[in-house]
Length: 550
Image (cartoon, rainbow, N blue to C red; front, side):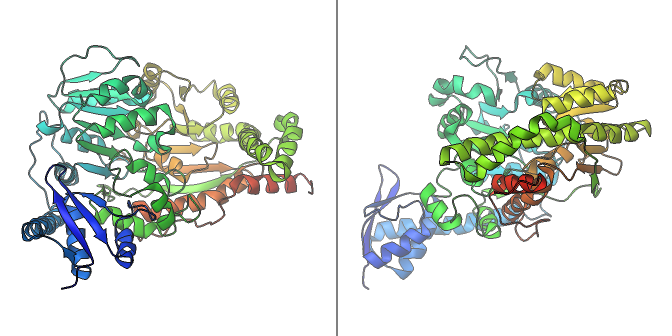
């Protein structure tokens, strides 16, 4: 039989090495293993994982190798193990399966079937992203993996305002010892099974991470790492992941913007899964950020047992979502209009540097102006709901908008849950809202991820300012649309025919399609829009509304 190349096995490195390969076979190999750079020449090195062995065995059926009999048997054994494991994992993830796991909770608490499947799957694959819908108990899925002695000590990384909540949940449900990290500098840690970090603390603990102190790491709301290692928290997280034996990501909305964010996410879970970034961009994102076939990528992640999502609610309460058109007060924004016009013109016609700076400023300015213009009317709408006897979760973004809401709603009472409050202040605000001391919680659009408990007292969400990402809205609504909610959930998007609102309503369509395809392959997105030039579109729309031609 003709040999197209030579492959050997290195006992020392536990790797397969393709020492030589004919040119046309190299092209095929690189299409199967995207981590091989397109210009790379042999030798090619492959870790002796079950999946790599299975793929190499399959490749050798089309392009036979020069290989020793003992290495051929080793490759075949690994291939057979891979097939067996694949069958076992398929059986494990059947909806009817309730696998036996070692984790035991306190008192009468018990894992649900999908949580047990998540825990059992993670034990097998070691690196996993759990994308269960908001409210379906991803916290317990994560805690359950810490019962595995191989995963101790475990580091759990959470958003700042959720550290206390995670510690409380661990103590409530388990007998595991837990310690909350209290600063950004390394100190002598007490003995514990689980250590809970805030994302903002990671950079300061990098030296300890590099010593392989933590065997496993869990990233709650892992979308916080969607920008990759460019930030301090991303750099620290990368060191933590690279020196841990297993990783777990938790997020119902891992993609906030464009599909390429999923590549960054997996750099902290399984860096080899999607190959080199240049290969990923070439194969999946021709324009650098938009995944051309989100459904196919979503299916690939599932087939690789790298992503799992349980979507069905235990009690189906379809969200009643609708748009409420607001009037807007032009007097409130008159002072800022001249600057906005200049920024819009510069965004379209300035130099490269000017366009970038102007676009960022215009985005912030117009969104703030839009929020201010409709703020009083949004407050009046919230008042109507409250005076009918209901509580409201009111979401916004800008401090000046909050100020107007606070002034208009002062007599009704409110609590603040935004980026300006400390974790302790947020905890107090949540308790006061739940306990009935106030009927309104003013929340930052991006501060609510992981917030739990308010579904017991509130079923109304008013989005007072829109976010560029529809996934942010989903996270927000998920604070009340979750298990424990007994009433119909109402999600009201307040918009006006001014400023950024008309454009944002249009733009979030493409982000919805990217997320839907990857997270839920085959599910049609609510909106589809293929224009990524959001700020230029915003600038053009705004100038047109002001009667300015360019």
